[in-house]
Amino acid sequence: MAGLVLFTGCDSGGGVPDDIGASTTVTSSAESNVVLGESEGPYTFDLSISDPGFKDVPVDIAVDPSGGATPGEDILFPADTTIRFPESATSGNTRSLDLPIVDDESIEDNETAGFTLSIPDSVDAELSGTTSFALTIENNDFFEVLADAEGLTPSSGNTDAHCLVQRSNGEVVFFNSNDGGIFSYDNGLTAEQSASNLNSDISAETNTIDRCDGVAKDDNDNVYFLLRSSDNSSGTDYVYKLPASGSPAVLGSEEGLSGVAHNNGTVYLAGVAFDGAPGDGFFSVNDTDEGQSISTVVTGDVDLVRLDVDSNGNLYAFSGEFAGTGRNQKIVRVTDPSGSPTIQEFADPYGTGSPLVADQGDNIGDIDIVNRNGEEFLVVFNGSFQATNGEQWASIRIADQSIDLLFNRSQLVANTPAGGFTSGFTEPTAVNDDGEVFAASRAAFGGEYYLAKVADMLP
Image 1 (cartoon, rainbow, N blue to C red):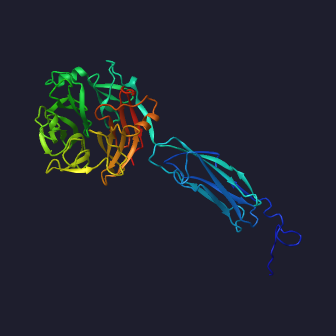
Image 2: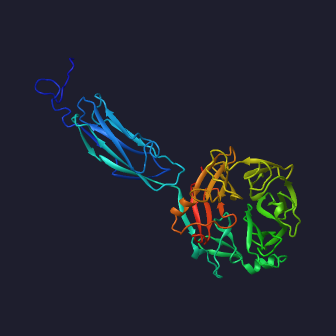
């Protein structure tokens, strides 16, 4: 049987119809306004062609970064590019475009880039659908005022918050030096221990307890404070245990203490001989017995403030301006504190390439260790007055001592409705393993009383 071949759409002369390609159209599926978070994306849209007509059809895509979103930095897409449908394209062919979003660590306002699609006048083709659109990137670094001055004001009317720590249920616990009591905040203020009861608990001190020199928490949400009276000329600190349930206890006391941490049944303490401690170094008490004598862990050429402990039981502290040779303004580490402890330099927070700015004295006012995505970090508060944009919060990766600036005072103030920021006295920062950073401000030098929460900052 002879084959039968049918030609459809031919002109009367038997050739290709002369109207093929006369209505070539490229259709864009893009939305006119797109909003994505930094952790989202990419944004994808399609270009499809109809009636291509055996000709090359270029679609130029121009990007306008005037809204702040920079191609190659915020969006991984060239500033200007061309997508081509070749001569071999058939009707219905589609090109898919991805616009990947960069999740950077900088703190920015929302950023927008404008995209405009066009076909050169020399090409007989039209565009349909959305031919221009805006892509807005929402910054996922998040600031908020957790508690303002009204929320932090107890019945006494004496507002304040410093020595911050966060329990596992989310509440932030702190000492109020103006009121003299211990409070927690979680959608409202709760008195954990009144000033009168706290002073009764620390019966060895005849003056009013009004200062905190350090705070720590254990896995059972018991909180350990270093408390003292500013009227006591000897500067005796009391290791005060505020249990999650049950009666508080004074575990021990000593002059010149300046940092506290807890690990595996032991409360570790940092001390400075100039301020009355038995030496420059690290000390300890157990976490249950009352009225203990302070035991020496290890001493050396250090001038310690603040303290925390990693998952391996190593201790970390900042050695200030008056340390021995080589340890001035360094972060030191004590390995094996319960066995054969050794003090070693761990990191130089102000070394070459560091974003942190040094000042004279004890710049690092807080150290908190967190585990984030399987890695441990020291989150440090740097109180330098020399930093251009004010106090700094940074992370130091324990694995390689790399330092990343998380945010600074100017960024905190610009992104919260509270007025100004003045650091809480001692340990004004708390950090959790979700990467949330809590910072306490007080009413001094243009600041207000408030607790700020900053999310999604850790690398």
